[in-house]
Length: 241
Ligand code: MN
Image (cartoon, rainbow, N blue to C red; front, side, top):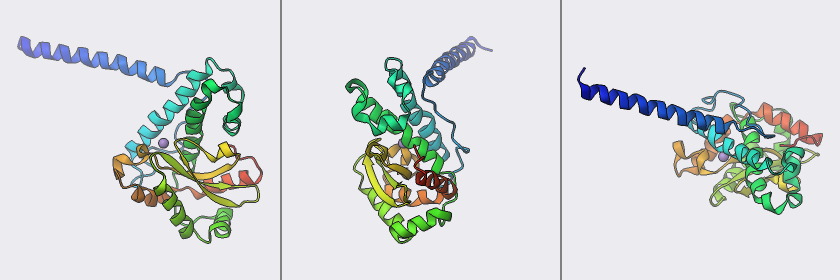
C-alpha cells in the first residue's frame, strides 16, 4: 500500500472515531434524566407507510418529540413543580405556572402532550370508524365524510404551525378545534379525542408544500380502536392526554 492511501485510510478512521464520540454524546444528551419520558412509538416506524413515510416518523418522534421532552426535563431541574403535577394539570392551569417557565411549559409541555396523543391514534388502517366513535361522529358531524371535510379545511387554514383536533366531552359530544403552535384544547379544560399535526415537520419530506394531500392521506392511518378507547375514557372524565 502506498503511503498516500494509508494516510487517507488513517484520517478516515480518525474521522469515523470522532463522529462516533460525538454521536454517543448526542445519544446521551437525548436520554437526559428527569420526570418526563419519551415512550417508544407503539408500532414500527414504517407502520404508516405509504401515507406517512418511515423517515418522517423517525425524525418526528426521535428528534422533534424528544426535544420537547428534553426541554421539559432540563427545566425540571430548577423547577420541582414540573415533576410534581401531572402534565395535563399543568397545561390546564398555565396561569399557575411561574412566569419564568410558563412559555416553556406551554410550548414543550403542549408539544409532549400533543405528540403522545398523536402516536396513539395512528398506526391503524383508517376506513370507517367503529363502535361508539361511529355513533358520536354521526351525532356531532352527520357522517365521517362531513367531519373529514371540516377537519381537513381547518387543518389547511392553520397559518404556519399548529394542530387540528376533535375534542370530546363527558356526554360523548365531539367538536372541531384548531390551535397554533403546540397549544392544545387541554389548555381550555377540554379533552382531546384525536388530532393531526400540521407542522411542516410532520409531512414535508413526502408532501413538501402539499399540506391538503397530507391531511387527506392521514385518515388512512387512523386507529379507530384506539380512538374508541379514548372516547370511553373521555366519557368517564378520565382522558388526560
Ligand atoms: Mn410534530
